[in-house]
Length: 70
Image 1 (cartoon, rainbow, N blue to C red):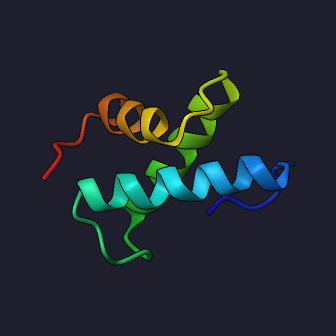
Image 2: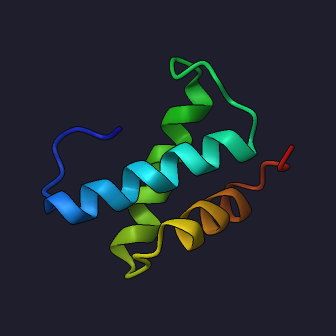
């Protein structure tokens, strides 16, 4: 997802789950789409603010980016 950030195995797992969930909700299948990187960066930002639940991370990321859910 995002390189060069220090995460525990558990944090990485939560971010991966949240990322996949967000991509599904946004109907994004091409991981090379620039929107995927935007989603990942926003998600890491939200996680760094203390949100550690994968479902909440996915929902907040979508909401803060302002992309419509499919």
